[in-house]
Length: 128
Image 1 (cartoon, rainbow, N blue to C red):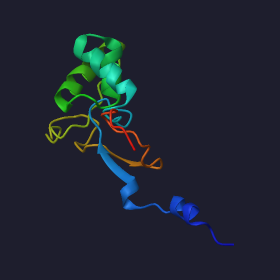
Image 2 (cartoon, one colour):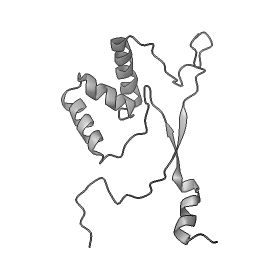
Image 3 (cartoon, rainbow, N blue to C red):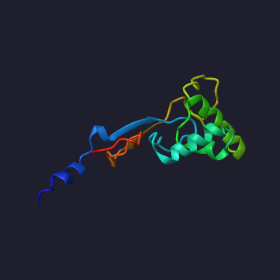
Image 4 (cartoon, helix red, strand yellow):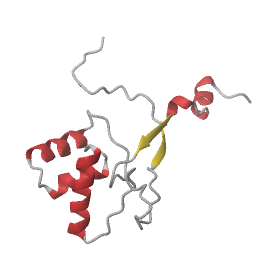
């Protein structure tokens, strides 16, 4: 039997649903939207208390900080936890560098299956 139009739309993957995101140092997850509650909380905490370990780790893991600041904080987190610092920056093109990375940047493809949830970053718009 034939599928309904709604079911057919769910099965089609278009280029609009695929997002490529460059990962920053220490980033593990995709960056949430500016209106996301967790992002607002941790970003505000980091702005008010930059030495907060909890805020530093969340902001680095979700790619909230700019690349230079993320690298600096990621280095502090690795030293604090006793872990090796793993980076893939474009500055590693030096042949004398004996790092395990090859100087390429990580790119992760994220499929957007959710679509528009109806939320916007301002949160104050009134509909109809």
